[in-house]
Length: 336
Image (cartoon, rainbow, N blue to C red; front, side):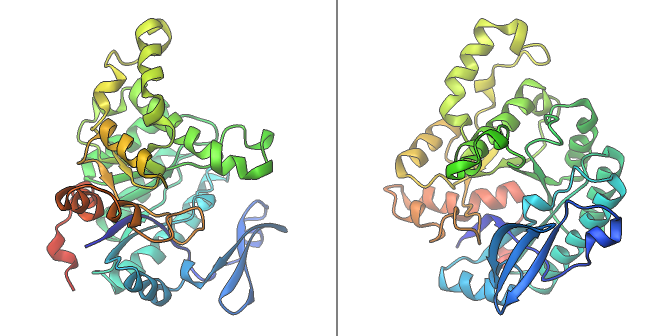
C-alpha cells in the first residue's frame, strides 16, 4: 500500500478574485488549451499546469498506474493568501476547502483532505479550522512556513496550534514566500535553496518557541524531508549550547530532543539523504510524500523507498504506516 501525504490540488475554476475583492495579487487559471492551463498572478505567468492538478479522474488514473492507493490533498501554497485582507482570505479558503472536501467525500477510499486557513487572523483561522474538522470531514490543515514574515512561534499563532491539538487536527507545514527570494531569482534558487531553508526556519521556530513542548499531542509533518533542518541540527544544537542567551529564551529543551517528535515526508531525491534522515528522525517519522503533480516532486512515487536496501517492515512504515499514524486513521478505511 502507498499513501502520499504531500500532493496538491485546485478547483478547475473559481471567480475572478481581483474583480470580486477589488484589488490584485490573486491567482487565476488561464485554460488556454485542453488539459493545459497557465497559473497567472494578475497578468504575470506563474507556472504551467495540467489536468492532473484539478481533475480527480486523471489523478486516480495516474495513481493507479503508479500503485498509489491514497493521496492526501492540499491546496497549492501560493493560494494561502496570508497577504490579503483577512475576510477575503477566509472567503477563498472556504472555497478551496469546500472543493477538497467534496473530492474526498466523493472518493473516500482514494483521497484524504487537508484545509487551508487565514493565519493573518487567528480567530478566523480557528473558526475555519473547526469547520474543516467538524463539518467538512477534513483531517487537518496545510500551513505556510511563515505568515507575512512572521515565524510560527509568534504569540498570535499559538491559539491556532492549541485549537488543532484539541481538535486532533494534523498540521502539514509547507514552505512558501521563501526568505531571500528577491535576491536569488536566477537558477530556480528560491525553490532549490529557499524552500529547504524555509522549512528549517519553521521547525526551529516551533522548537525554540516551545510549541512542541507546550503541545506534545500536536501532530505536525514538514514537507521536503524537513528541508535543511536534519543536516543542520548539529549546528542548531551547538548554537543552543553555546549561546543560550540567544536560543534558549523561550524553551530550555535541547533541540535534538525533538528529533522523532514530528513527521517529515520522504521527498529528498537521494538514497543517502534518506538514510541520513532515518538516522536523525527515526524509522517511525518518515512518510511518503511526492509533491504531486509538480515536476520538482518524486515523479515515480515511492521509488526511492522501494529501491532502498531497507527491510519490508521499514519500507511499509515509510510507504503507508507512518502516514496513517500521523493522520490518526486506519488502513481498513482505504482498502478497495
